[in-house]
Amino acid sequence: MAPSVSMKGPFLMPNEPTSNESTYVIDSESGAEMARLMVQDRILTEGMGGLFTELPDDLLARAHDILDIACGPGGWVLDVAFRYPKINVVGIDISKQLVDYARAQARVRWLENAHFQVMDVLKPLDFDDESIDLVNIRFLFGVLPRTEWPKLLQECMRILRPGGIVRLTECEMPLTNSLAYEKLSSLFTRGLQLSGQSFSPDGRHIGITPMLGRLLGETGFQNMRRKVHMVDASEGMEAYESCYQNYQVAFKLVEPFMIKLGVTTPEEFDELYQQMLNEMSSEGFCAAWFYLTVAGAKP
Image (cartoon, rainbow, N blue to C red; front, side, top):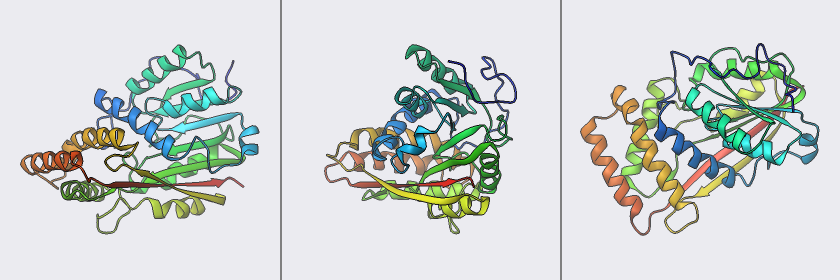
């Protein structure tokens, strides 16, 4: 099925160059990060109760073209393409490795309506004006500097058709009863603040969730819909194993970022990391991970 999305240039480019600069706090070409993102994607979708739980079914019935920004290995795009075979779904990511993997998965699953493109969200999006019905963005806080959010949302406004939807899903750090996790978490959020990728005034939080509605409103989006999600990652709960794996890998991957910014040392990090794994493995470990979806419509 030919894509109906109008792009500035070829729809599929098998050998796109990757950007020389990345603001991602983790190496986007890391194999470990690819595996972690696949685990995280499943956690998020299940925790949200599905693909579009805050949107009415009739809105999706009118959609022809959906864009997923920072799609990673493509899990969300592939799920949407499978469930809605008449909708063209496009995923973009700065990582060629992730895009190549997602394309391979689309071919294996015979999902001709799933497409993937290497693209840098810090630059103008390579789509024509009013060519998309819905833009999905999940967990971009680790990629997008605070000052770049308005620019990206203005691009979303440009490419959306009238009545089109942009939906943002972002989180704060999980709350746990692990002292070592809480210390590592606070060091990481301090690093985000120092790097300009946090809205927190003091670096104690990521600070993105309370900003989502205002960011959309200041861009001109209307008719906001909000939905709060929570994953119980406590020991003994269904999400525990996958969340444990996510935390275990994620902190090792952000270690270079934290050391580079001077918020910790290799010695301190190793000590806290091992203590965190011990505490998370113990009986009685409790964790709650909250995230928020805010969707707005283009007038």
